[in-house]
Length: 103
Length: 103
View 1 (cartoon, rainbow over the protein chains, first blue to last red):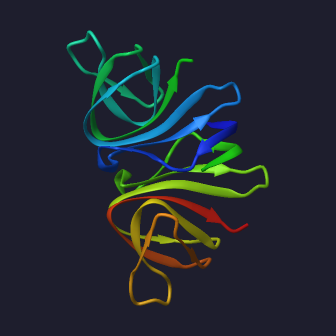
View 2: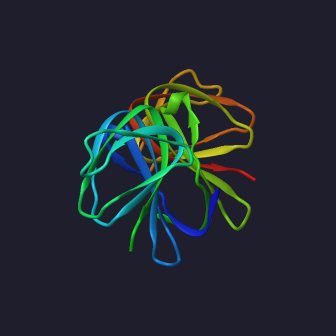
């Protein structure tokens, strides 16, 4: 799969000492996505806008706001994180993902 | 810095169990580059076409073909690896890089 006619920011977004990194992709529509990668670990992120996370490879277990258990998401699966909230993740090996931000 | 009007392959290129990953960027000219990230470790890669490696963040020590010592490259610095050769790298913490492939 690919994104055509986009702008890519060269420098990576780096979190947790490089265990989580992403590249920002900007679309002509003004939309923004990030293509990211997480290595094994436990992470928590906060959202501003609503985010849709799509797993491109590997897998991740996610506890969404209001939930009390983790759900495993693998390749081809996605989930939505409400705006202005936080979500926890556990990555066993690694996960390759695409994050879409609602305008 | 950014790349405009490009195509980005969504799925990451994954090496060494995710310690090295990259995204492929294709230009209208037919040129290809990868935006990659390496975590701490020692790596060796082979080249097909000649490659120019530009450090976007962090640093890496590199032993180029025909050399017998490592040279440290930091942000803003780059080096060229001849076609059909191999080169060794040592990354202390992490390195964010852009690799350009000669057509």
